[in-house]
Length: 374
Ligand code: XIL
Image (cartoon, rainbow, N blue to C red):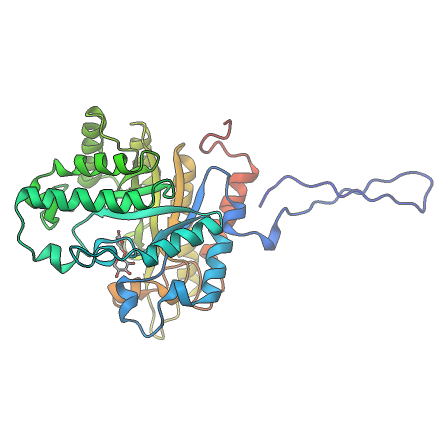
């Protein structure tokens, strides 16, 4: 909350002297949301549920159909990331067919609700359509396929996307280029620079990011990104940011070195972002987390937010869904769950309050974050 007190002045007319009664008023208080609590230069985002694992779940497509979900989405966040709706398999299901409807709907919703959009993603090894994975193409054809896709998708949303995850998960755990990525395998790592150039041509104002998981602690993967970032910048490739997805599990300990990692990229002149934060845990029998687990989860969320707040140009902080109702975690990590900041009925967990209070304190203190002097 904003710590400054607002003076409430009451004139006591019953006495001859004027008395001023000053009461502290919590600015916002229980009405505050994540977006209203946040420092002005920090976007607070969420994934927008649809596509991917949702398709096989026993509920209707979340974003278009769940009204309470849409209300919370509009109220709490000022940034939105299509969870799957801009991925290749979804937006480009056949070689000569694009499916823009659902992505258009998110972009429209975001505009109507004063939200930025994070585009996700253009160059990735996963969730590519069968026609791409199984097709036979010459190098020239494959290159043209990627260029056309980037030009078309980025161009369609020109001026409406704040940040694009241009390259997603391009290194493996050993810091080597992922050979599962068809473009990298067939065309070589130089294709990464081209992807950034094509995206920049299509939307010169969008901020273009590298994005990955497993970069929350220093190590060979972070080293690989730092080396690549330096090379791209030296070659004047339009790279603008480095993002940590921050898919965390309480099995692996707190992300207590994240600020240091982000700072290394900030030092290169890049923006940084948290793009997919969630904190999963091993669920006890019965599936309900203990109070202690929820408290630990809240500290993990807060630690990631604190890391972003500590770094000047970390201007975008996104959680990968805000309700357990639609989380990808139980589907992808059996026996783990409860990874988001709200229960299935949108009531709030300690992690939600940890984020909101931390945001409000940063804003109230006119925190040195970002460029407050602008
Ligand atoms: C996940 C989605 O949440 C699921 O709905 C989908 O089935 C699989 O992908 N890293 C990323 C995200 O960059 O795109 C992934 O999203 C989670 C891991």
